[in-house]
Image 1 (cartoon, rainbow, N blue to C red):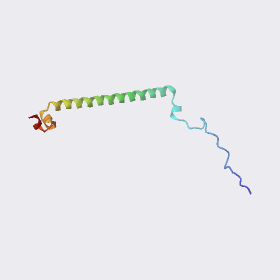
Image 2: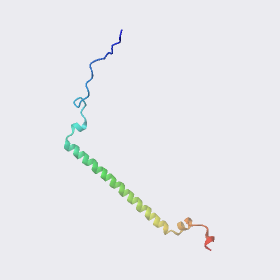
Image 3: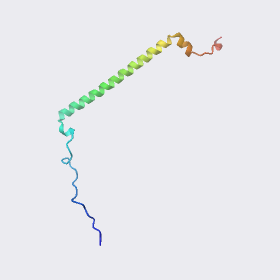
Length: 88
């Protein structure tokens, strides 16, 4: 007796666009999608601008601190070379 290759049922048809569940993109109109994409781009640009401003403020604060330390005699004395014998 030869074994039969049995199939448990009729072949499943390939998934087509009609068989897929509706997505939010399908439900929304083109104008709504365009508005959402524009808003997303605007938010990304705003975030980049905020990050750039924060970086600039941080850099300015670092420069101001460096300038203050350069005018502070105690700091200069503490960070300078301590071997004063070679300057005699």
